[in-house]
Length: 193
Image 1 (spheres, helix red, strand yellow):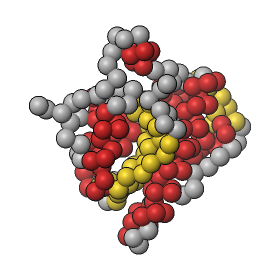
Image 2 (cartoon, one colour):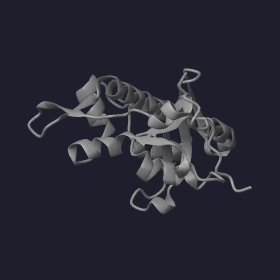
Image 3 (cartoon, helix red, strand yellow):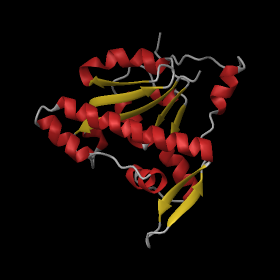
Image 4 (tube, helix red, strand yellow):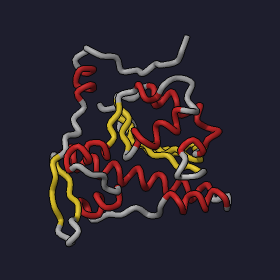
């Protein structure tokens, strides 16, 4: 059974300066338990043991955005965990970045329910439950894109003329394959002891 985790974060701050960004909510999907969960900033201590037991963290633009911001709250180094950033794989395949919403719409005919700016507005209005619902929905969209790409070795995007075009992706987890044969550990510990 896979213990990969798909995750997304919501933040508040100046989007043009990542150093100002603060986590408001983190949502995850755990394959091992087939569950979605959300954590507010003050609950991150409950999230760390879950992430530490994962075989791989999966996100969208997570290498550039989510993990560096979330890493400021973690006492170890989340960047050292096995990870898959779908956007990195997409850029490797077609040479440019695509929005999650655009890939999801072209591939699966699904869309995100809001955007990060709306989540910031909800934070200012104290609508934490709305942020959690939105963040979990982003995780669901990421999960669907990931599973389609993993199973079909391709995703789709729309060209400037509106034509839906396929492109190849490889989301295989070679680290998990090694772990399954006993060649690697299934726990990520990066805390300084």
